[in-house]
Image (tube, rainbow, N blue to C red; front, side, top):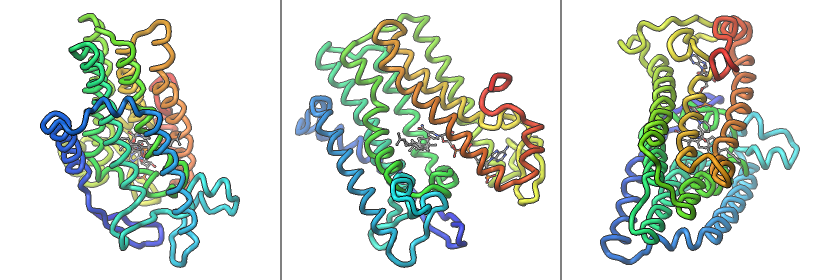
Length: 339
Ligand SMILES: NC(=O)C1=CN([C@@H]2O[C@H](COP(=O)(O)OP(=O)(O)OC[C@H]3O[C@@H](n4cnc5c(N)ncnc54)[C@H](OP(=O)(O)O)[C@@H]3O)[C@@H](O)[C@H]2O)C=CC1
Ligand SMILES: CC(C)=CCC[C@@H](C)[C@H]1CC=C2C3=C(CC[C@@]21C)[C@@]1(C)CC[C@H](O)C(C)(C)[C@@H]1CC3
């Protein structure tokens, strides 16, 4: 798959995230359940040392890519090139650092492969810990593992779509993404499974159906909106998008103004957040359960609101007056009639 960079250089990517995901989980299952060489509960027992190792490794990687960005012929990112050390180190100076004879794009690899696959593995290890303690896995743990594994597999299967996100096309690779991808994603996104391993819960049928409904609604919006935009941009004549209303822009690309993208300018963020809510709800709503496992929802809401503002500013700069016309036609940012 190829991506056109701001300097008109074309980068190529070998997209095999889903194969790596299948091989990693297959190997983990074979060595732990088949050969009995690895006890998966070793992972939860060593959670703090593993987190520490990930923080140290990501920090060293951030220093290495920062230093390498001063070598000749490096394409620098727009935002990580201010000359202010702390800011540039955080945002990332180089746009797409590559390793192993330029065959491995470090940013794309870190964003999808180790963090996302590691997150799913940690979740499975917490489910296994619960199984060892109780002799069975509760339905709440099954839901959290199933929902999050679905999200991980979906992201990896749709690997090509990440190449057009602002992380790949605009942001540099610095401490924020190195730490975010390798330490933050796996070791904080597994909080719900970790919580349920310590505080097991069994959901009633109505609660289970309610949580499934929130997840299904979130996924329909998230995948529906992301796929609609992707198909519209790559194959506008496709029957699934041919009926959509859109507006021309001076930049040359058209902006969709009906369907999912007519409901709000980042309706995909609403779907993503609703799914995040469905991952927290199985942990309960009272006492400690009302705060600790809801960390993901709270953090994610803040990230999405901030990200929407950043994308809005970038689109205003890209589209100029056309963006103002678009905002008048689609006035809501993320939640129709609310925000
Ligand atoms: N789980 C997690 O931690 C995170 C998940 N995500 C998810 O990643 C996904 C991708 O997000 P992100 O890259 O931020 O943003 P979007 O997928 O929303 O892409 C924004 C871009 O789409 C184009 N666009 C905007 N409006 C329209 C329109 N009406 N019609 C056609 N094109 C339009 C613009 O680019 P242009 O016109 O130049 O093509 C704009 O810059 C989201 O679903 C998000 O929820 C994101 C961050 C973290
Ligand atoms: C606190 C801190 C340093 C945060 C850094 C932010 C990162 C954790 C996130 C920025 C954008 C992300 C995306 C995903 C995971 C989280 C980060 C890295 C993503 C890979 C999740 C799966 C989705 O399907 C996705 C591929 C669309 C998504 C892309 C953006």
